[in-house]
Amino acid sequence: IDEKQGIFTHMQAKKRYGYFSELTECGGEKLIKLILENIGGEFFSEEKWYNRFERYWIARKEKISSYKPGKKKFDRGRGITKQKPLLLESLEKNEEGFTPEEYRLQYEFKQSIEPSCIVLHYTAIPSFKRSQEVLEMRGLSASIMVDDDGKAYQLVDTLNDMSQAASGTNDKCIQVEIVARNTDDLMKNEIQSKKVTELVKEISKKFEIEITNEKIESFNGVFSHTQAKKKFGGSSALIGKEFDPGEIYMEKIIKGAGGKFYKEENWFNRNSEDWVMIFKDFQP
Image 1 (tube, one colour):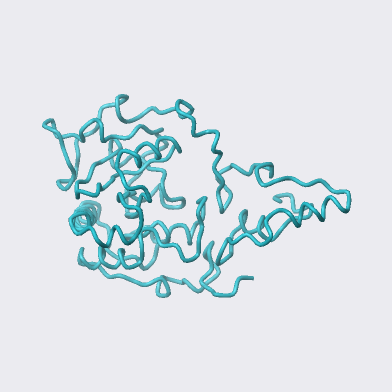
Image 2 (cartoon, helix red, strand yellow):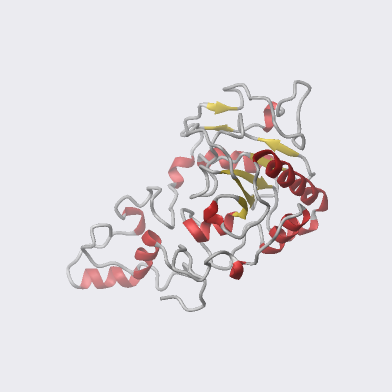
C-alpha cells in the first residue's frame, strides 16, 4: 500500500495510516480476495502485506512466532546487569536498597531518556509474574509495575532507561503498569489505587511533571495508554471505546494526586484531525 499502486481495502489503509474511529472488520478479507481472483489479480493475506510486522504501521501486528522462549535478546535487567540506586521512596526495596531480583525485568536497552511525563496502563492480566513473563515474551518493557497488593516495583535498571510500552511516548515518559484484568478491578482495589496515586505524586515532584492529562503532545503530564494510542497509534489493539486504564480511574488518580483531570472531549484539540483515532461517531 505504501507504493500507492494496487487495489486495497479501506481497512488496510486505516491500519497503515490511521484516521478512524473504530477498526471493526467489514467483511474481512473474503470480499477483496474474491474480487481480485475474479479479475485475475493476486491476493495477499494480511500476514503477507509488505512489511506488515514493521513498527511504522499505525495498527501494529505482532508476529506470534517471535514469542518463543529464547527468541528475544536481552542485555539489561534481572540476572544480567546491576540496578542503579532507586530514586523513589514509594518503591519496594530489598536490604541493599534495590528492587528484589525476582521482580526485575529482562529487556533490551534502546536509549536513555529524561522523563517528562507518566503513562498509566493496566496489564489485562491478573498476576504480577504472568504480566512480567508476557512483557519479556513480547519484547516489551515498563518502568514500574504496581501489584494488586499495593506494592510497586521498579522493573528497569534506572528510570532513565527507555521503556517500550506506549508508542509515541516511550522516549519521554515513565511507563507504569498496574496489575489488573480491567478497569473494574482497578476501581475496587483501594490499596493499589493509593499506591498509584503516591507514585504519581512522587514521580511528578521528582521530575517536575504537571499532574494533568490535557495535552499529551506536550509530553508533560499524566496520561492513559489509550490517550497515547488514540494520538499516536502504534498498537495491536486500537479500539475506539477502550480505555486503558479507564477514564474513571484516570480521574481518580489525577484528582487524588492533586491534579486537574480532563475528559476525552476536553483533551487539547481532540476534535481536530491531528489524531490517529478521530473523535466522531461517523467514520469516513
